[in-house]
Length: 314
Image (cartoon, rainbow, N blue to C red; front, side, top):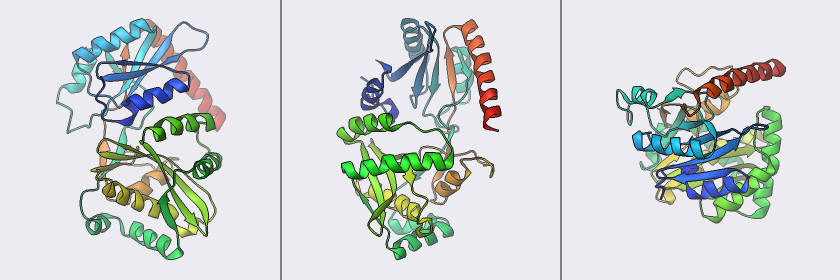
């Protein structure tokens, strides 16, 4: 039985991924999704936000890789640098057959302790953030939990609008519908919406799991940006975490400590940084290699593919 400390390792997340057509393997303390490589007999495993690998888990990974023809299993442990990591931890991972891999999940994050009083939390925010929250309140923005089918359909519309506007990749409607069906049904996923003049202009999917409220998905319209709805939504998410008796708000991802203003995610990073959260660094992405020769070939092809994609984007 998996005692997951992150929703991506939960049984419910595994059930959702199975609905999207992936094979999900649950063994011991970890859950791995199996991704077939087209036109080959091989697969890649993915284990996000699991525990720090030890020798027992390596044996489990080896077994999963063998039974599912995995070239490697990509692991992104929920382990913080400097807190949960021993001095020789990464060296031990290398000795157990891991190498540093290309990341799928960001290495950095913002995590806010929501246990202080609301006044103490507000005082920890950046001045501009507090100002924008007041602007949204004065403009009459109203934020509330709304798990209705109508609100979720609006979330899908806004997600498509946001994706086109920002020019980044996002999962399609089928993915989000299956996610909502499974995780909302398990009382994990909820929808926080902001209304202005009676219209939903911002929608956030939140995951309530363990002692933490997670903010994995959000979308908003370009209209009425001047009312600063997103700032109020984040503040209400923090207040909601307190109301539900949780300890943390996990903002799902961030850039590194020296964030590049030219990075396409810089706006999201600076927005999240205004709420006084702790900037967290995880140990990153580590590939457990089951088939060394095929892994080398895969990495060469993968690097070439990304070069071509970057050229096309330019």
